[in-house]
Image (cartoon, rainbow, N blue to C red):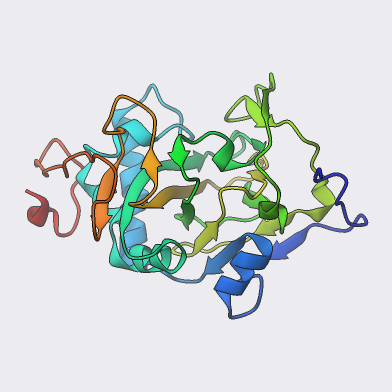
Length: 275
């Protein structure tokens, strides 16, 4: 059954600032395919992450803010420190259990006025994972609103199978690929997040975001965590951003943790512990 066939009557977009089912994020995730956790990380660490984004853009001027992604992670001590923060792993553990690895991570930083849209898609349609047991944590670095292109989801669409994808020639989009099924945007929920908030979503949920037409940047960090029983099938192995973060190593090979070198890496609190 397509999303269009399941469409509800037209209505104004929902604006969600908390967990979809009140104070029960697990029920919200099961019913709607996503959950929101408020204030997971402290302002000091978020400020360091903001500085990290700016540092990456200076180091990689050939990349846009929407393209700070997977192949940069494993050699970057701060990035690994951030995704291995116990507060984030504790959230992930609620969904995938205690044995946790990083599959992939990316900053998506939409600049003011020119930040691009992300077309409607399901993450699991693209990922080399068997089984498709994975959870995405979306960490807000900036305030994320409908005006600056916040994450949008179709609640309940995670109950659909993974759909085919198709290419779309759209210069205003980050990726030129979208889901091949129609999406009734009247069902969409705009997810308003404050810096340090975390949104968690299912690999099958239909989601995307609009362009940033506001004077404010919109930056978030996507973190894809897998239980170590989920196999990464893409070769060569180990996958560029595969890192064991907690518990038993399971079925995968992993990249070694990077060592911090002053002048080579982004400086951060506790960097000496990564030398």
